[in-house]
Image (cartoon, rainbow, N blue to C red):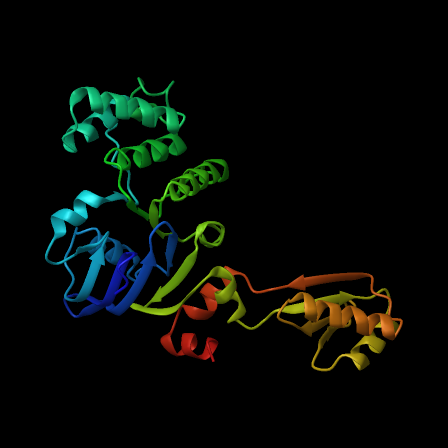
Length: 316
């Protein structure tokens, strides 16, 4: 396992009764990066977070988290990480400031240091004005910011974010994304689980897709998209004559006579697009509209999750 990895996992397994939830997964996550774990409900994402954050134990495999052996030194792992789960840890009866000071007490900070840390985090998360109000009065976005601020009281270098923006409106979600990017710029490692595929596409340095307890794919967002077929260049013509002429010029296409469009398979590269444009120019074919479609993470997710044999077929 790599010494510089924030998380290094080999053969991680977990079952609940006769249900296998994790079936021998391997991970290697460099420090100071954002890693996103995708998968449908029940795929094992939350179980993975619970194991790596010491909340439950694995049935097998080896793992080092923040440089510490997960099985033999869980206390050191806990001291090095922060966890923001799907459900807020905020106490509604306390003010925002009191929630942060409570976390400082739990981290054994002195009272002056705890108040200093609380004030710093309220300012960082734009909660100064709300800091003396009960958390019960907070909006969803404010509660999520406070929840993440509470995670940062102990200054962790590795943070698990389990579906951190579920239920947030688009503006609050993007604010959370900016906070996450700022954390990584400061050297923090983020382990992110999410069902918002745009979130993973926007944030993650690397993405893994978990299905039926197994990792069925891993790579950058662009690498994963390139593994899925379906990219094409779509040409729309002003009349049937232009469509007929183009269909004769390009092999392996599909056409829609009603829409007057021709779909040319393509991986979406600049070279492929240039080739199409050169052919159109050489044969003096006029196009009313040209669009390029490349597979997105929705396509990746749908192709790789479901039945294991479907995932294998998608990767051939």
